[in-house]
Each structure stands twice: as structure tokens, then as C-alpha cells.
Image 1 (cartoon, rainbow, N blue to C red):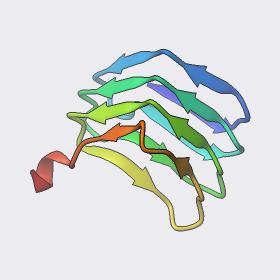
Image 2: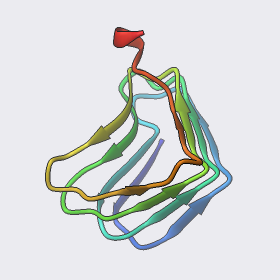
Image 3: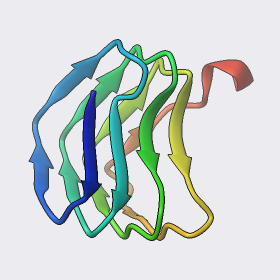
Image 4: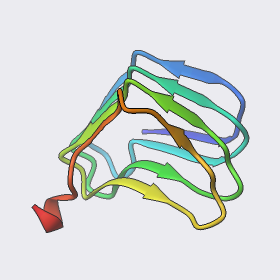
Length: 90
């Protein structure tokens, strides 16, 4: 997977398959665009800390938890993201 920590970087056009966590952000204002995250045993996209990432055109499906957001995080997700229901709730 990919751990961004406290980041303001652009992460675009990646396919991340398998592993424990797909993309993890713990701070900053990173931009995630057009990424595919599938088959992670844990979290597909994890947004923690006081991060404020912008997500657009991403697909997170088939992970243990497709999207996890900490109470203190404030992500901006638009309608172009495809976040599937978590496997446990389908």
C-alpha cells in the first residue's frame, strides 16, 4: 500500500491490490484522483488525524473496510468516487 503521512501531494492513476492497507493519510491536504484500491485485507482508503484530503474519481472495493475516516478528519469526496459497501455489510 501507500502511506502518505502528513502530505499535500497529488496521488493519481494508481492501482493498489492486496496487502493490509491500500492508501493511508494521517494529515495534510493530499489529493487522490483516479486511483483503484482492491483486495486489501484491512482498510482500502484510511483517512486519519486532522487531514483534509480531496478525493475524486477513486474506486475502493473488495477491501475489508473500503473507506475509514477518523472523527477529526474532514475529507472532501465528490460524486465521482466509487466506494463500495464494506464486505461485512453486503
